[in-house]
Amino acid sequence: MFDFGFWELLTIGVVALLVVGPERLPAAAAFAGRWLGRIRRQVNHVRNEIQRELDAENLKGLVEDQGRELESLREQVDAVRRDTEVAFERTTSSGLAGPSSHPPDSGADQGVDADTGGAREEYGDDDPGRQRGEPAA
Image (cartoon, rainbow, N blue to C red; front, side, top):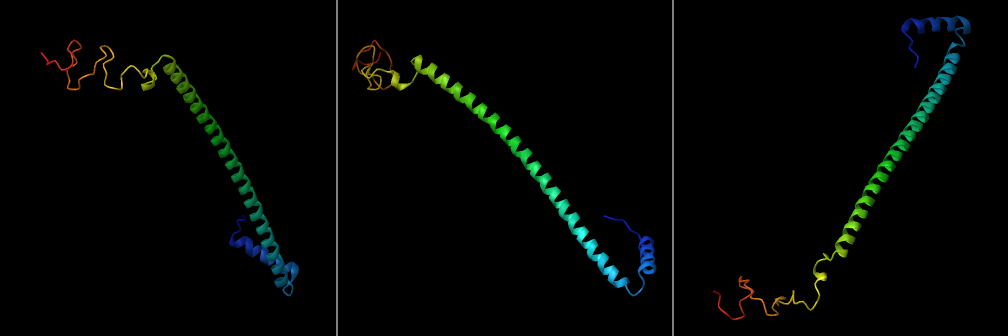
């Protein structure tokens, strides 16, 4: 706080000795020490209070930044959600909804060939002209 060298302190001590006198100098030094301690504590208190205020301002700024970032992320999530809903609506309206788009009587899930009405054979020959039980040519 104050930058006193040896010569400054010696000069202050000699002036205090001449002004106050040798019998009252110890009491005056104690009085000055108490006041310097109070001033030092007050300065430290003010410094700490200012630091807390600066930290609070810094935290408020961080919270505001995080809020803006969160809002940006919400907008991105909403955009993805809207795009997904639009794609889903297009898919369901065009009939590409998956297994539920087959009518239940088409035989698609029952091993029945929808074109011929006969059972499909599962050994790899997909010749539609061949009848069931007929040997492969």
